[in-house]
Length: 447
Ligand code: FAD
Image (cartoon, rainbow, N blue to C red; front, side, top):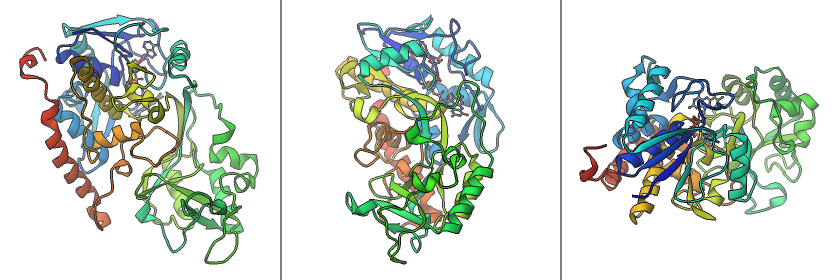
């Protein structure tokens, strides 16, 4: 089979290279370490965990735990190695990071079909299938090169707003309305605030504990997506004239325009989860929960599916740029895998690397790439990257795997039963898909 070049030997690139090799495809894995390192990478090994040593909850009734189970089922190198080097951490899957990276490096390097070539890739190979898996801190030269291929600037920062589960919002307080009745007229949920509530909220945001950026993340925010605390510091009324402006909105219960509003935009087509528009923030997760539930009317019982975050992150506008097999529409020999596609996290990037290996293998063998069912953790991540999980024109922002990306459960389900139901449905449909991605029998000995 023709050789595939994988650029970047992180979580996604290592998984992708190894999965291709075990299917009999020769791979060149080009990793810039140890010749050059990103500001966050420290070791010389592949699959380095740059921050926490935790791969988060292993409980299959959480979306991430479900993703662990799916990756185990497909024989993931990363998950298998994590299991081997697991350290006690309650229900989380945490690893001895050095032994974990050593284990992955050894498996990849020792595979007879993988050749690891060190050094920064500044220009993509001109021929053959290429998988770009250079992660959130893709080197600068390659970022420029990728911009040339994709035909637009890459995103350089995440500005992630929190997501709230729809059934935890107090609908006695929230009202559905678009500014000036635009669009469908009720595309947004609005949480109205009076003067007193608004200024109390601003005071809390200013005083709240924030995360300090890493040294290489010197704050260079776009004016269009400033963190709420930066806006609050500019002046107590800045947010009321910005994302919290009440213009064009009328609270049907009072017949008046509120002093300020928190607007929530539908996150999935079914409206089961809602994005707090313009609420990107570096407040710590604990502070976000405390301030939002105590200061924003209607969120007193909010269940947060994702918290607000901001960090440096290179990623592409995947829903518009990538085809269904995660190759670039404009240049189909280029595939994208891992965090650069807009998935977020070690395990999510691994899953994306695995899916791209399936897609590239299908391309090489003339087979069909069959994505995992939408109801599974992998399938929902895939639908996030392709945009199918979101309303049309939804602005692409990186996401962890969360139940908010899953298609809603049919019928009315009690809140306490939801996780178990998502999990049971995913496990059943994943089991039905699994045989279609088995490594061919004839190759299993070398795998
Ligand atoms: P990476 O794992 O970053 O791998 C990319 C690889 O490409 C690297 O080895 C890099 O050296 C290489 N590379 C880059 N440019 C080139 C080039 N031009 N040529 C050749 N090679 C190149 N996720 C979590 O789940 N938990 C956390 O606690 C966490 N903390 C994080 C903290 C920081 C500071 C950052 C930046 C990210 C954090 N993440 C965390 C996100 C996590 O790092 C990513 O989700 C994951 O590593 C992405 O996997 P990847 O394979 O896409 O990229």
